[in-house]
Length: 222
Image (cartoon, rainbow, N blue to C red; front, side, top):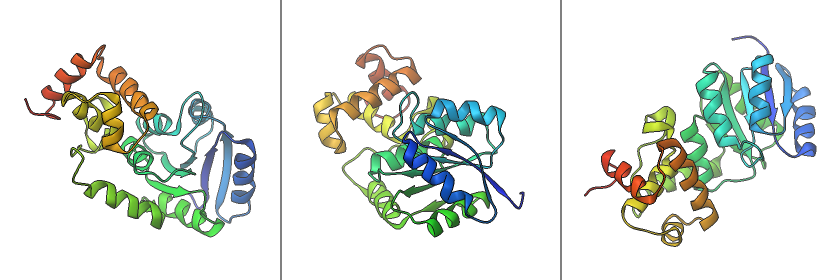
């Protein structure tokens, strides 16, 4: 590993992006090699500008941080993704980790915490701020949800995230979007997003297709 950690900053808000670039530029041993406003731009930059770490926001236009993380870990296995986002709900956390993120910080993190997380990530370690750690443990221990096998880099089929597996499981149980939203404590719009993403990955055109897939892969029992 080089003495200098090369970092690509990805955030759709220009003022935040520029602030992060300026902050990281003051840290010893860290070099910002580029900045992007969405996941698609980040992927293009990585093709041209090597980096060790991508500091990744989650909610962005064009391509969000979860999908960008998934593609980066597949196409650039030597690049680590460290999430830095406003959102610390269990859905966002589990989806990002399922896509292959190595660490997860919220934007409440200070300069020292971000610097320590970047160095830990570069050393191959996982980093979570305390609030994220508590929510992640709570989410994994919730007895009311179907137990999804962690996704993507953790061996779910077809690159499904843990939340997408949960949604498919509940579809197989006959739940509509409203009931799924209630069961998972998320909004119906978020449910629809997960369904659309899952259907695209598994090639399903209907809920019946999704049900058959869930039974075939053991997410639900007949």
